Image 1 (cartoon, rainbow over the protein chains, first blue to last red):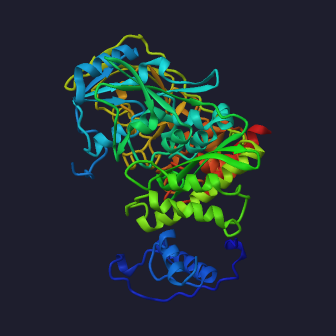
Image 2 (cartoon, rainbow over the protein chains, first blue to last red; image 1 turned 45 degrees about the vertical axis):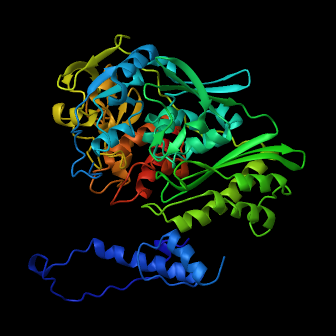
Length: 73
Length: 489
């Protein structure tokens, strides 16, 4: 399985915004790093079985149901 | 009966606590208290159920002071297991891996390490859960149970005790004393497989299989399924077809259509439900795959022999009571208990419904062990009692009387020098918020005692009941391996 060190170089840009719920318009950063993980999993599953999921969690129950809808065992 | 009280920090319900020293005294106490009493074995179900207000017994009869109710032994071809034997003792028993593989395998797949250390085989049977891991295994092994009451003893098939979710045919006044079953012969093999969301969780579906080989054919087979009906259920139709089919080769499902067709018949025997862990539809289909794999695995083992026991050991010592006499304390009273905590001898006054965790944190100001979930699912409250990790949130302080407690505060040397494991946690940044760290330390300290050079897999399996919600487990595994490497030289 590919892990973080194998990812290409990333380039960061700063987008100046104002987050109204944060102090002085600040935005929390911890959770932001979590967001792409779910998308990465969804992409991996799409790549593996050809079904795209738009909701979390992607449980074995949902995967099996989706495979059956697609007409596979 | 709210199911989810807002606070599991304390045990609200008050009860009389009885600690009989002998089985005869326990039976007499139960006869006197009748339906108003609950029997306490490991407490991993009963204490949770009392906290969640599912049960409210007037009296709790603690069996942990009865020394001769635990143990595994083979006696003229029969394996006998005392009702108080901890699940982890089953999971680490070389005898069971060799001669009752399905039961050892079920015990190894059971909940978290701490729950398996504290929970008992008797408790697992008497809890009446259709998701029990040991019951399907005991059924394929054709186990019998001996129950004791004031009227004497009776022995019944374990299957005859099944009734429905959360209930059994154990009669009021009866205490389960022992289970026993024939040791597997050379032509016999068994297997247990389960599917669950995460390792420490209850099963979505499980299957135990015992198979007797007759030359190149299957002589007979028994298949029992967990979590797909109101009780553990037997896959009778599948059994008939599997026994008549050609022997299952190892490997691909599609290459063995006959066995797959036989496995599909489980749909006729199961009645699964939708719940928080899975759906009825998924359980029904997954049961087919689990049965196929378990039959194949058992067949393979008839030729190759059983797998060897995993590394690690159960050290649960039979606890010596300070005075081996029966005693009790009323719900509205307190009692003096003796505790050795991190090497200090203490005498404490406690009420029956006080929890070990709260005594440590609030009365002794040992706030290292944390209150997390309060129902034994997160591991943050892990401390050692008599050398074994326990979940402090589920242990009655009264039942720890005479015990030797070690907390995270007791890891460092008296001059403040950190334990090498603590230092490794720092060096590897194996924590962020630190809430889970005391529990992680007490577990990994014990792991290194059991297995001086644990693999990553062994470490992760051992920690399956300890939740970290920020750093993740990779750095914790590295800290364990760093300590192991240093200590091994």
